Length: 75
Image (cartoon, rainbow, N blue to C red; front, top):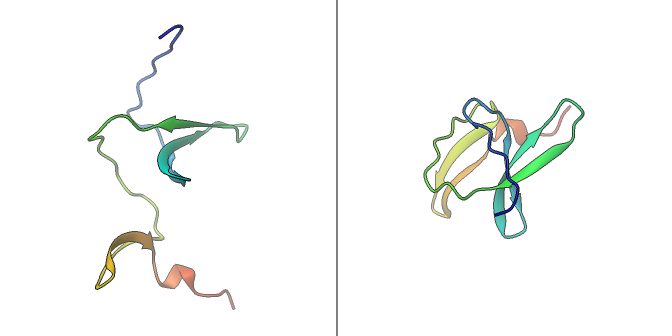
């Protein structure tokens, strides 16, 4: 695998990003540069801390999406 560097991920904040046909874990640094990590860990536990996230269950399916109130136009 050539040169590699391993850093523990526990406690790392980042974002799940849907990019084309995959989901990556994006980590920003203090300069707003980022690294997108491919997710190969099949059962990594996550905690949702986004106050605008909601679980929505409907006839169309089950989704993790934005809350209805967060999608309202700003007046």
